[in-house]
Image (tube, rainbow, N blue to C red; front, side, top):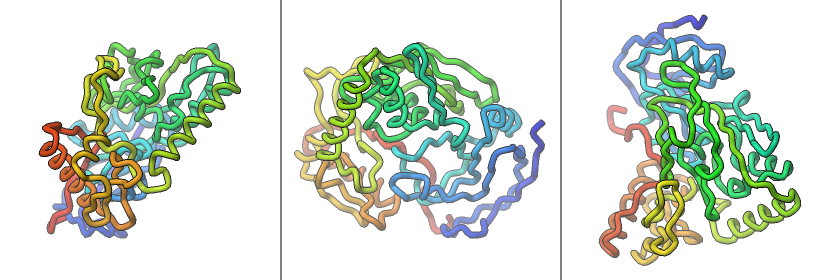
Length: 334
């Protein structure tokens, strides 16, 4: 059984943000996995910005995660975090238990045309292993991040989406219960799904069409070459910054007859290459927000909001963020 421990929160040793909070006592479960207080999150995100989480929990396995959530005070918020590929953590950090899955959640198994992937398995690794077994999930090859995030955001490219290939997803609810969800339960939409509040996705079953392994490998190599030629893959980015502002079906498939591209309306607004502090809209692809080296989360978010303002003034279109932004801004009291 998970035991509990009493933690006094306040100024954290080794923390560089200078954030201080009123002393409060919160009883947390003691898991088998790793639980770290005041853990900076900047090195866990692709953009390399952001303050600390109150706690970072890295569960040993699914049972450890379920026991921890079951014993955790329901008033304590949790935030499941993938590999931080599509995320801005604000400079003041996050008042929550951040749950990050690692070893034990990154397995990939292929049998009879189905791929069972742990939520921490990288999209690219799933695509490659599936292709070797003759299963076509090649659209995942160039999508940054892990399968958990791909399911949550109904990730897609080249006309294919997770909604097209998902058979089921397994989550552990905020109450610590194991639950299997169907695509209908998830209610997939463009870059969205409906996961239960506080639930942590731990695995997914995907079924793709059959294909020749050599042909699938060649297709992925071509996709990678095209991506590297058009996107700033060597820079610190978080993938596409804004959603394409157009009509999409309920499954997330684009209506190409009406689709606009975010990069095009950003260009039309004169914002390619725009900068605030260390943040820049990429010169190579203007829908990529780049940390040029010393950006803060505030720089990045402010530039994104400036782009949204200029695009609206130029075209009347309101861009929607695709990058998730979480946490508190840095204040004098932080």
